[in-house]
Length: 221
Image 1 (cartoon, one colour):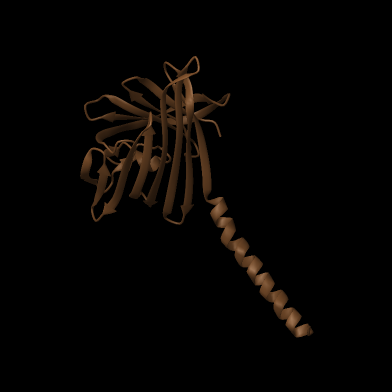
Image 2: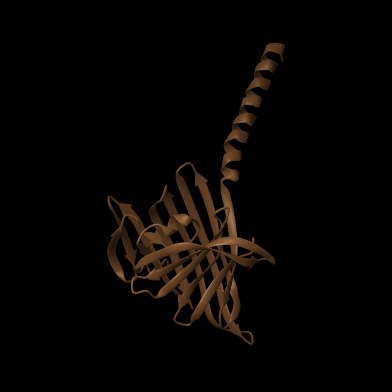
């Protein structure tokens, strides 16, 4: 092999390696995973809830996985599994797809941005929501903007008001954390959700009021 050919091959190899490293590094740096313990006010710890957030420029993909079990003396009384994917462009939800299986029965919700509306296909029928509709999944403070919120399991729309944040401290993994607490209520005034974000904008805890009790999601990793 000539010296000139060897130099060209080495240069080509260097370019390939640099290209691979350059393309791989931003992707890995932009992926964040948040795992929450799920606790019920009556049944204690009942499962996990995971948000994986991948950002590339103005585009964000949020993948959510939930594994919920309510059991007494080893007997499972309630089981829910769900897998969901959200695609965002800046502060706008562009599409959503979620499959929820509750006690063996599956339901699917789909949605997609269409012009100045957001079209929803759900077990409750097909309808449109405002373009700034947000999903009830507090992966970012982005979901705290807007007056309409969609439930990801049934595709129901709720008109909400988001009250100004108040500074609080709460225990997360044995340490006290400063956090901004937001209260999200139905327009009737009924409290629906609470969300706590730390100084870095990470959701460290949130909860939802249900007919069967309060369900709280606390960041573990």
